Structures are given as C-alpha cells and as structure tokens.
Length: 184
Image (tube, rainbow, N blue to C red; front, side):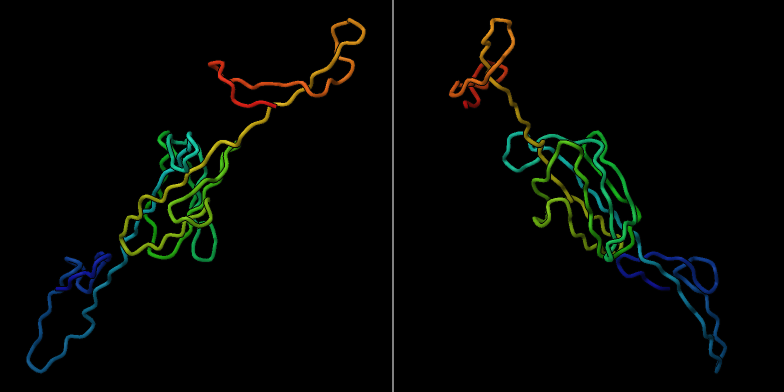
C-alpha cells in the first residue's frame, strides 16, 4: 500500500485495482519488479472579490458585478478568464499548483484603489500549492470623479442669450439635499 503525500491523489497502479494498493506474490528467491504507483497533484482554486469603495476609505463597500478577471501563469500568459458575479465574486477552479497572477480590468468609469497584496492595485501574485484553495484575493475600485463645468454670460441685447462672459461670479455646487459641496 502507498499513502499519498498531501496535495496528491491516486491515478493508477500496476494491478489496476485499488489505485493505492498492489497485490504482490513473491516466490522464494524471485524478484517481483515494476510495482509502480501513479499519483498526480490535486488541482487548486483561486478566488476573491471586486468591491467598490463608496466612502473613500480604501476598503470595499459594495460588490461590482461584471468585472473581467484574468489568471496568468508565471510567464504572464493568460490561462483563464472570468467575470465577477452579482456579489462581486470570481473563482478559478482546477488550477494546477504553481505561481500565478490574478489581474482585474476596471469597468468603464472606475479606477484602482487597492488589492490584497498591496502591490500593483489591479494585480495579485498567488503561489498555489497542490490542492490548495487560495481565497481572499480581493480588489477595491472607486468610481472616477466627474466634472461639472459651465459659463456665466451677460445678455447685452435683451434676447435671452448670453453674449459676453462675466468674470468673478461665485458659483456654488449643492448636493441633492441642498447642502453646499463646492464653491468656485
């Protein structure tokens, strides 16, 4: 009988029966060679979430669905692609042991804030052992700020259209409740 190392599973053996047990009969003075066991490494899983930072504190507050996430091998070659679900979750199953990079592509209107490994905020390095589940590979994004622009013009000929700019006018931006947000 053979006992698998952690992270391995039985595939086959010489006698084709129980793949971690070989029946052997040895007669006196004889050798019974070729009692080979075949094992393979268990695949692992890599998963995480992509969340939006709503309050500018660099932590994810709400899930972002539909974000493209790519799994790349140690050479930077894409090996799998998925998108986040309604809860912002993504997962890569049946991943062989090795070194990988998980990269997310921001949805239009979003920018990177942080990720779990603290490096490039849209790339996480993962070293996966046989049979391991690497969870918590999380990304945080924020919506890009917008801009509001305009002009204050004087109507010189009383036709209700602006004819010339007026400098030095104070303009106040208010939120939906009427509270001032910015002044220019």
